Image (tube, rainbow, N blue to C red; front, side):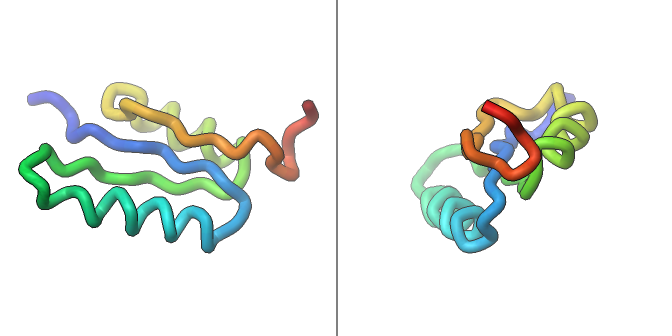
Length: 71
C-alpha cells in the first residue's frame, strides 16, 4: 500500500508553519486527495523527518534562512 502523500514544511517561525498547514488543510475537501503535513523548525529536524518519511514526502517547503544553516 502506498504511503499517504505528505508535504514537509520547514520554517523557524511557528506562525508561518501554522498558516501553511491551515492553507493546505483548507483545500483538502475540494475533491482532491488529502495531503498530510509534517513540520520542522530546523534543518536538522527536517533531515530527520525526511529520512523517516522519504517514501511519502512529495514536496518540501523550505525557508532558506534557517538559524542552523549557512548560506
